[in-house]
Length: 217
Image (cartoon, rainbow, N blue to C red; front, side, top):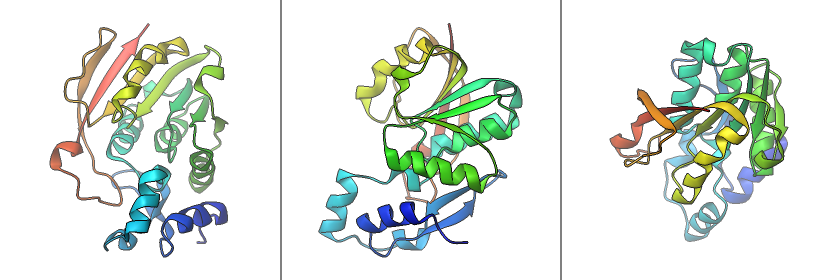
């Protein structure tokens, strides 16, 4: 299977020998176009490191919180079934794709990065589902039943967004493995999930423990 040309070209600009390959995610029936794990098993040149830091290809990984949230939706279909869902900061689109496969009425994959939107489109096609797309959360109407959020709070500057998610949806599910002092009056912790980032970045084990939070207005 040939990688989508646009995505492969975007990745090659960062890492010349990197390749996208379709990978089946563990304990799911989901597939994503991910950076080949073999490409990560080497030292990066200073120039490669600079490019990755300036424009990281988040969309070419399945981050632990996204995988955990996708599994949760697949195992608890009622969260998405018959609902209008927005996947915020969608990245690869894994959570939104899981929601669509769980019977969502509609899923909007929302991401500021145009390459991430293309990744979501390619991954939706890979999983034989149809998504809608948005690059501006605040341009969306308040019409969603559920907002899905994974791997967004690693940047603490994004914490104020927790107040905004319920401005567009009746409920929000937030999956995060980074914030250890999470406190917000609207969100309660549903539990702890386990997952790892793919390809494996050998992250500390603590980042494989994903907390799931729920808010309802």
